[in-house]
Length: 23
Image (cartoon, rainbow, N blue to C red):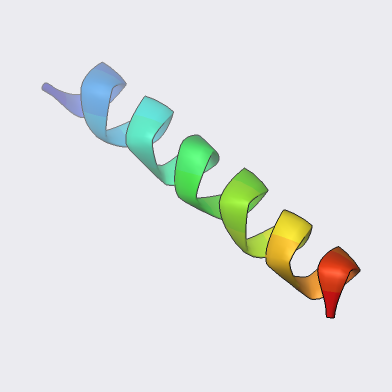
């Protein structure tokens, strides 16, 4: 469960970074 949460967190971080870069 913790591993999945970490993976999801990393995915969200990447999505957020992409959004910031696009901005």
